[in-house]
Amino acid sequence: MGHDHSHHHHDHSVQLTHLNKAFIIGIIFNFLFVIIEVVVGLFVHSLSLLSDAGHNLADVGSLALSLLAFKLLKVKSNRQFTYGYRKTSILVALFNAAILLVSIGAIVYEAIHRLLNPEPIPGTTIAIVAGIGIVINAATALFFFRDKEKDMNVKSAYLHLMSDALVSLALVIGGIIIYYTGWFWVDSLLGILVAFVIVFSTWSLLKESLRLSLDAVPKNIKFEEVKAAALKIAGVKDFYHIHIWAISTTENALTAHLVLEKNVSQDQEMKIKSNLKHELLHLNIHHVTIETERETEIPQKVQDAEC
Image (cartoon, rainbow, N blue to C red):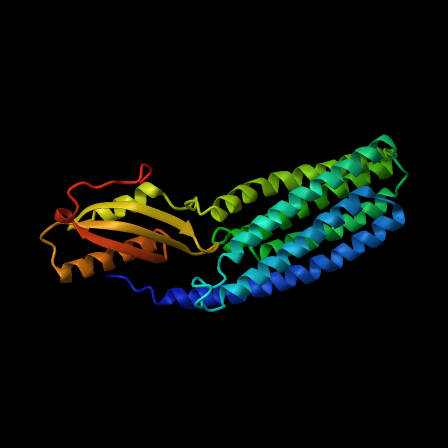
């Protein structure tokens, strides 16, 4: 086959260990920051701090669920769950995105109410607390930076934490504006800004996690490239009834019919299948089931319209 993929499992194990630590650190520090925001927000009656605390609490829950999903990736398959619990990583991503979007309604409702009835709040206090948030969110986001394109839950954690850092930056600016101008309505306006940031950072995650929940082809896999990879192998006549889906946020599966030329021997068939699985692994498809046929065995082939 020309390549050795034995390092894959070791690298994956190292990656999971690194991410476990990252999630645990992120959960601890962000939960402590939520407590600070709630206490100070209630004390000074700041909607922007309380709404951001609610958003950060949802992020803590998201990080905890993502950590649980990574733990479940290690659980072995059984007769009832033949793929193990890998799919939970996709369901967690979908659940996290849905929760964040639901939280927007409460934030916007309260922000509009307070915008019409602004209350005096200390801008300096808001700026100091938000400044702490910038440090915590940006620092914990960096733990996920190198792996953010490898897994949907990791990307979700990175986007949420970075968006939180940007929101905290906006709150710092808002606190300074309130301190120098006395425009207390700025606090409510920033509450609405938090909601829009949540939408922006979450919408693509919601769409992709929903697609994968419906067993759509993962967006990092091109259907045409998969078929082309099979057809370029010597001895392959056709490749059809192709079905590709995600079994987790990091692993994908494929089933298909492989039509071989009529003069292909059994030994050649095994080599062709081995080469094909190798090519598909390079296309990020890890679990492959192939049914082989000879071109003389199917005089009239009925293909799926989309395949």
